[in-house]
Length: 421
Image (tube, rainbow, N blue to C red):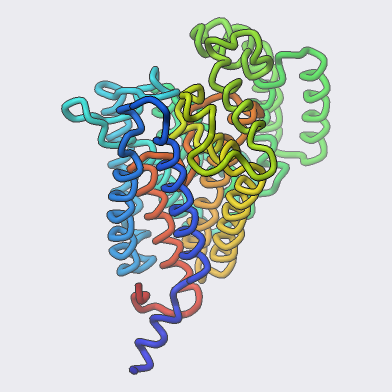
């Protein structure tokens, strides 16, 4: 056997590939289980078959991406970013909603058939574009004004997504932005000042809590000693967000207000906005240690559990496989995060390292928010669980990200040739 062939086969990151395959197999099995109900349903019937078919396309896309190089991926950042932003604009005019995001204009449809969410492509493209911008900077940003380029890259798709409005996806963009800035070497004090207006907006529900946070912020500004103008802007921005928070609350639509109130107390609307999370908690709680058995979940079979094959598929895992199944799923995600972070740390250049860590951040936010909302630790935002939730476009983009990581891992270990998948 030729030496080059051996090297190519050795360059495959088998642990990363195996983790992704196990997560996907686990997810397809749970989508299958979600369709096993006591009464016929056209919503979940055959969903696992469609997911399995798309998985075949995902493997083909993975093979194609791994044929290229990291430099080719870097070159594609601009075209993909421009295309994703154009699609986000288009979806504002002709987009449709679905599931827990029925009011969101997030899906492109042809003839009434949803073909995908441009926001999924935008997350991938924005990660690549942000990595390209940060890698091109000769020095680590030391002030807020130095961050205008990366903030602009993330801000454009973020604003378009929030216009839909899609809070869950918007949170993912914010997570990607801050994680990649941190990985690029931006100091945590600067990141905290950047995030401070948003923190003030959240904490403004209590005057006392907001006041304590404001004093901490002022102390941080005095300690970090940014440029005078930047320090003044940060302090003023926090005062303004604290003042306008009640006004923004009044401008929220009734269903948006209910979702936030239900997060604090699901019992105030158990048959309406609180129904999803109430049934989810019942399903997960009934699973116990070993669960009720694969396909045997009572909440699911009786169709009390809504969106069981998409946003609340984690509830099906908890109900049918119990604490053991939940632990296995979360352990696989932890392994994915750790392995991807290792790929980022071993990359041979700034761009691939930032891309890899950006993917870690995106997956982490998805898992944290999705699992959190099923347990009522997060508001219900309609965000899917990576590799588990039914959704062709999300699965495809997730596997393209895996393919990029495989390519980065191969080149990071000194194997510039195409990897042997």
